[in-house]
Image 1: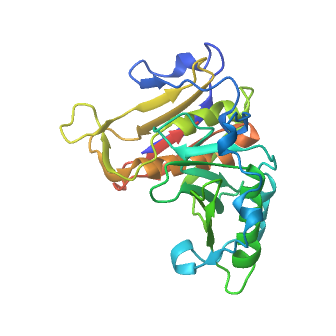
Image 2: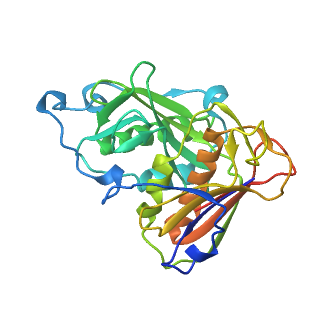
Length: 285
């Protein structure tokens, strides 16, 4: 299967999408979720974050979080993380209206280093200052990635209620191909599609709509409300379905295209997803 993420110019590229695509319409906010100011009840706002109140140290573990990370890649994505000290809400996608849907991933431009944010068991959401997330990631990179041995790591208990975990891990992206420069909307316009797509690990069967075993009919897709950006998932061959994949794998591929291509103003496609080798899952943004 393949995933493609691309800009849609008004009426021009939109006309190139076959009418057979089962394209759902996303409804992104007027401003990007992750950067929108958060208005919280005063009872939820802590004077200081967990990161500055306690002596937080990362847990380095190559077996759990990977080895041989590229230090320069991890520092590159860490530098571009938000430094704002305003509180933001992060919560499990599909359970509420949060400024960041979990899981949430920051990825280096070369796709080799990922900074993942997730909720702690039993905690669906929490609030945190993005600057504290940036500092937590920097600690993991300096202590674990730069250390000997070179390995990934995690910091737990972040956020106002200690409900967020951050880890730095290596990533081997799928076969991502970026197109030429685009003249479409900003990076964050397409980002809203990834915030809305499923990201669970329940096994799915991606395939033809007329197959009894299919759980996700292809093609599948999202567009933004104004139809300026589209996220499409399809198979490159008709016939057999792709079994054994899950939405989390597709979400990872969409993030890879987003950070490696769309962030630089280019369309992108990821191929080779799913468990059937002769099918190629494509996420195109």
